[in-house]
Image 1 (tube, rainbow, N blue to C red):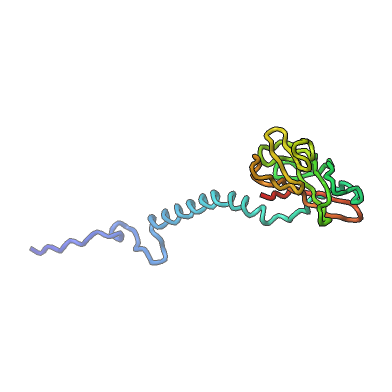
Image 2 (cartoon, helix red, strand yellow; image 1 turned 180 degrees about the vertical axis):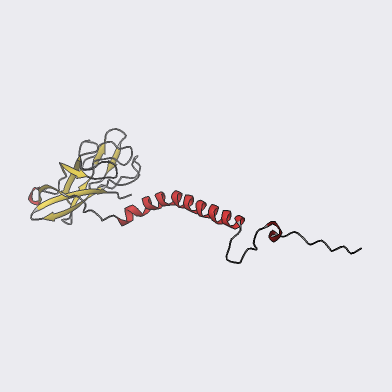
Amino acid sequence: MNEKPKQPQTSETFGETAKTKDEISRRQFLTYTLMGTGGFMASMLIIPPLRATLDSVLQKKQEEPMVAVADVSEITDEPKRFTFTLTIDDAWVKNQKTTFTAWVFKSENGDIMALSPICTHLGCTVDWNSNPKYPEEFFCPCHGGRYSKDGVNIPGTPPSSPLAVYAYEVKDGKLYLGKLISRS
């Protein structure tokens, strides 16, 4: 009965050396590799929308195009129609020439007003003093929209907001018009 107690089999019994603390197991290696791959793939999904969002913020602001429309001496207190062309760069088209129309006049306090002729109800074109029933008003013949001389919509008519105005500046005796500004 001189039997030796059996020793548990260890990696050393199979010819492998014991692992040191600096080595990683196969399971840890696979975990780190899969985490790295997952992180890389996640960053590939996050970067494009992040770049698209930040791109507009980081771009240099371009000066808004302004174009000479008339001599200031031509502008009276009676609205007069002026047509002008702006070159617009947007996200899809570069150097697009677009024609605009503006009703321009001097208000009672002497300020220049440049109104868009586009009705805010359904996008029809308004005319000044075109309906004898409504003198001294902008009138939309399509749906009966009416605006006062300063472009404010008249209550009880279809438009729910005033006519848009154009950005403007006066330089060297000339009136320059730029982009539309909504007044809703």
